[in-house]
Amino acid sequence: AQSVTQLGSHVSVSEGALVLLRCNYSSSVPPYLFWYVQYPNQGLQLLLKYTTGATLVKGINGFEAEFKKSETSFHLTKPSAHMSDAAEYFCAVRTGTNAGKSTFGDGTTLTVKP
Amino acid sequence: ETGVTQSPTHLIKTRGQQVTLRCSSQSGHNTVSWYQQALGQGPQFIFQYYREEENGRGNFPPRFSGLQFPNYSSELNVNALELDDSALYLCASSLALEITNYGYTFGSGTRLTVV
Image (cartoon, rainbow over all chains, first blue to last red; front, side):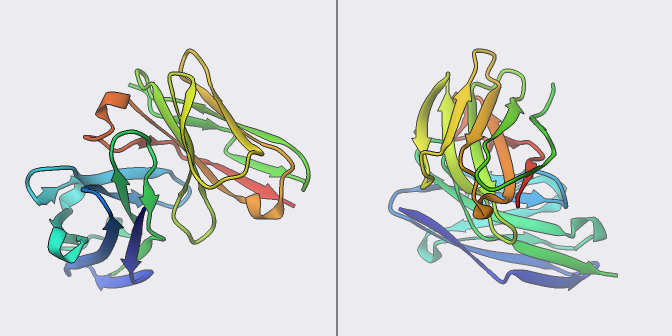
């Protein structure tokens, strides 16, 4: 079984401040981990992914995430928030390649204050 | 390359009715998954189709069914609609061999309201 917990359903930062969105996962086998962003009335857009190899992964729009197996975490960060980063962010885990089943967290809404 | 398109964008149905939602996969993609996203929650996996066969299903009752066509477009059918079926339904496509390396490409979804 696999599960995802996103700590903090709402995160608010000032423009230019560090963004940190937390994600912890549970998986009985090595996981594939993803971060998606969802803007209002839109589908999900892939920000970045971890499958194997380098544990620090870089994604689009200046975001990056680090896979820490010992902490079962995959936190998303961005050094400097921009107003356009305001959206909902979802962490997802998938185990194996058989089915396309991804388990998503409940999401974190990021607000960026001017 | 075209993205994933879903139709209709919004839909209102009455409890007990049946509904069909449609998805056109991104060009070249032969795998499609459907997700249900209730308000304030993350997407929940319904099922996946690969080359017209269902090859994975989440915890949804049999009244949720699907089809994938030779051109890789797909449908989600829900019978005997219940109020709790009100949600955003997302379709996501991928090239099967790429699943481990890329996430899915998601459509913008169909907002279903059951009254």
